[in-house]
Image (cartoon, rainbow, N blue to C red):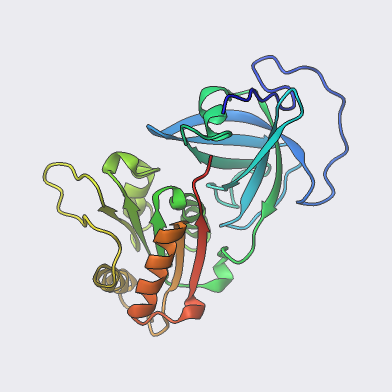
Length: 277
């Protein structure tokens, strides 16, 4: 779709506007200024936003973004927060994956620059969140851009509970599709009881010795064994808390596989989405 959006003075030279009252609740819209744009992969970028009104959030929550065209047409999408709640107050990271035929993601990738203003509201969401009081160990399972809220959980856990055993299983089509790859690869250096494992479902680099199939029960059994090794002498009687995020089919398949290997249903939290445009 070729709609040209023009929201809250977006562009390198924002038009002056009258100050508006601060939002009264997470359901109210407010202005956010783009401070930085980071290229994560060939089709994923992270937008660092400074909110007009800082709001505390939980790891795993998301924000809505609204774009408005000159003719009044509006498009709204939800994007998970990638940064940790311990991030500087009023600063959030939203990672947007490009959907070529979409309405919103091409605008982010082709138009939005530092200094632009966006309309956002949030934080939103509760069931798919983690706090240190919930404990662990943690088994995080991501499909594609489903890594985004799990990155927030990983970063928060690193800041507030670095000794909590945590394993991420990330399913991607190719190694080039792994979002935050450098950051994930360095997990063990920052916290020895954490690790990221990849399974590449479409193409693997030469010499690849990792997984190269869809997530299945056998893979999860091996991941649970690796998580137990990360725990070492820490008590591991309880099942790990499992977070699964990605496309609907991926989430349903992975959740069924977790049940098949004995993870109780109350220990499984899921977040699913269709194609984000």
